[in-house]
Image 1 (tube, one colour):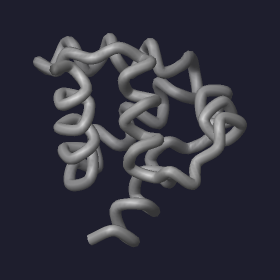
Image 2 (image 1 turned 180 degrees about the vertical axis):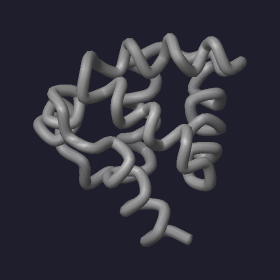
Image 3 (image 1 turned 60 degrees about the vertical axis):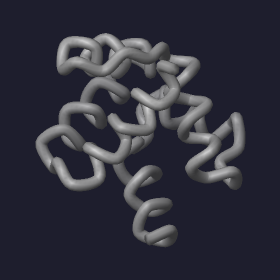
Image 4 (image 1 turned 90 degrees about the vertical axis):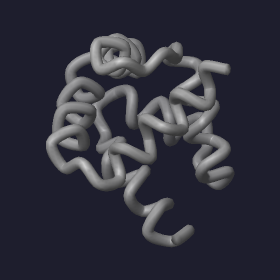
Length: 88
């Protein structure tokens, strides 16, 4: 299941500051599609929609508007790290 790949990618992001920065920069420039393509080059296999879905599972309090704001230039790193810091 590719959603599991998205979950693994988010887990890797938790401890990899270089990956966090790369993802944040891609999201600011483009969208979740660019993140999915970059992740594919690193051996992960998930779509932009699957990434969004996994983020919603990680933090059910993230609204669709917040996800769109992230895609429009917000910080996906902060959103993910905030949830993981609260959930661990």
